[in-house]
Length: 356
Image 1 (tube, rainbow, N blue to C red):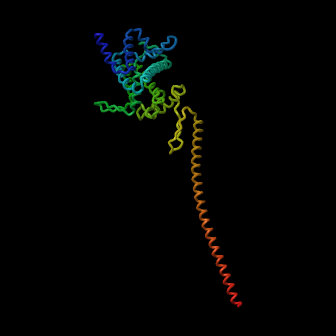
Image 2 (image 1 turned 60 degrees about the vertical axis):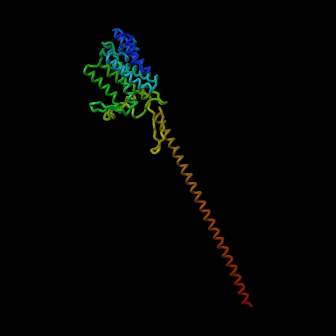
């Protein structure tokens, strides 16, 4: 193919793509071409035994995820980048989207390398530290991270597989992707690092989106639709919740994840909630008791004010009745006195007549 036609094809392919997607695509293609040189692959792929001292090939944690040796996998990575860039970069912004790719890629390579170091400590097999092929690589972690991000953006989306009549829930996408790579490793189509990188990429992206990503003035995504257990089928979720809670406590202990904010419902009919991020249980209970006492005192004040007003009304009614009865008694006494005086006059007149 003529160089001019290659240039036109590349420009046409990149037209309309986001800036981050263009940069990632160019990096994938460039590293694919560079690794055709034999000694370059071992300098760019991740080899767990030499990322630390004395060799200190620590840069491979950043380059390993962008090294793709298979041309078909490279094409698939470019297509995924094109779709993901058009979906997430307008949603998150250029800087946040670039940060997501970099962090997921680095922690994918780091987590996979630590897994191989742990396997070496358990089995004492040097092949876990020094890969005969020169190291592991691939864009698997970021691809799994895209599936996690898609589940966050569209939690209720379902896909129907045409002709098979299967409806797939997008929340199971990361699990199905990792399981597919594991099955392909079992039949020697993929190497063992592929499902490991995908698993670490999905975990890294979930931790970042769940606890650290800043969006709309909020840090992380605490919604119930984005819990770790929600990535598994319903019949597995109870066991996953128990296991994930224990792992979460360990992650908080090593400060990989922040503590969950504590929420207390002060009363059942009330919607008032107090959120205390990082507060101790004793301090939270003390605050709760203070709030309850304040609520009770306000209720009692309202009740006492109501009783006082009712008593005032009763007293005024009683005073009116007493005034009326007093007036009646006074009138009766006056009429009675007049009757007595008349009787005395009559008696005196009658006595005078008798004397005469």
